[in-house]
Length: 119
Image (cartoon, rainbow, N blue to C red):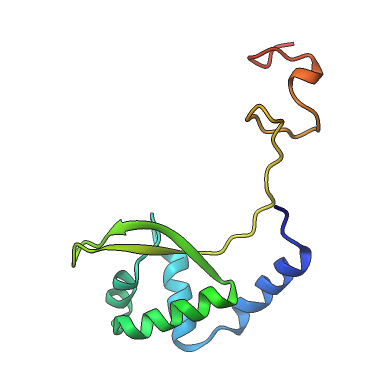
């Protein structure tokens, strides 16, 4: 699914408007190494209560600045929790139907390439 130019422009306009704890949470998620942080991770890193982080997560998600990431087990509590990732706009890759990336339109087979891409 292609992302409309207006959606990309809207995303670009959201981040500069962030301030306060929303900006702190967004920046912490953006700078997180590896799998995104959970609410517990963010609360520890920012020295805030989980309830205040949770509210900012909801606001950032509603604004389209972050998205849900994979689940992980928190190190401190041992609970399974969702992680969060900064929204990154990517144009979807076009595939040739055979699972291969189709950069030029049409399938590899239609251009005379064999199963291994050799002419």
